[in-house]
Length: 261
Image (cartoon, rainbow, N blue to C red; front, side, top):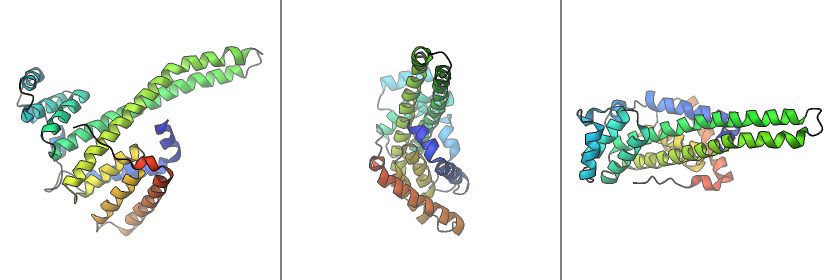
């Protein structure tokens, strides 16, 4: 599976991008300055003005072109912890207001959070499936002559539901990261001099194995960060070379993501 291959072959790079993710929020000062996104805006439900989700749902059904109502509904769902409903409402809002950087960032963040949650569940499901197959292999190696024929297929059958769940969750996680990457790409076009946007784009591109996009985003990040310490710059330059090599080895990884409006 994709996440297993990433964990097995690219762990150092994953740690590097986790560091870059933190750097984007700390060193680059997200939430500070005219080109930045205020984290409070991403998770604030203040736009709902106390209006209930039920009332807002009724309003958008009656007035589907009311962008403000969709935004309030999205924030209300988000504040209530209903991530999928919030993403859906934000997506509808962005269909009406496609250049709202705060909403684009909020939607991408929610997609990343949901994708990460599913990725964690993938690991759990894979572990459950592996437990069955290990038991089957161990039993099959016992002294009973019929053990290989009787026990190993049974354990594989018992492991199948967990394997299916892992595959479904993996597809869902990849889809979420791919959509998030599309929104991050939109943000980099709307604000091409925002270095933090490039870092976050690189993170999502890595999650979908879009290595060419990772390399390009990090190159742009370096250009937008002239005061970066030389040691750190050299480390990133080395990573960029690795990602370019990965892109050549995985041509399909460079295909762009297109979030549904």
